[in-house]
Length: 184
Image (cartoon, rainbow, N blue to C red):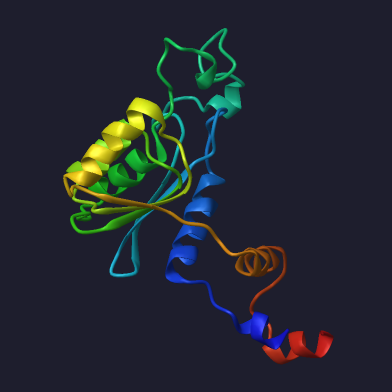
């Protein structure tokens, strides 16, 4: 038990957990997605998917468009949400933060539009939790990878680290560790 108590998340797990926490701020009815841009193991910006700043939130009004319960319910209308990756990049730009040479962690593999944006702002590595692209979209993604524009890797959080993170969210963390050991 003592070994698990002191086990630290890997850097990938740590930043993916931050992206997952950002996803809890999502205002999209279709997907909750979070992103975090990192450079030299420092967080530069976070983002989550939701309506553009100043626009009504889909979660507040109960729909994306009138007569449309969710953005993914239409094959014609585009999503109202700004994607998490785009919001993180926009936040960095808004505050004058350079993303060139950074990496991004996202809870959902970037769509092709976001992947192109990620590449164009100088982010070279993408770490994601859940796959999204398939078929022709995956082929285009793979072309960008083959051209050396970006690397993409699916990652996950170990069960031990996930349980530790859940405990730290549910209970105070700033208590002496000796108190925790005595309880076990």
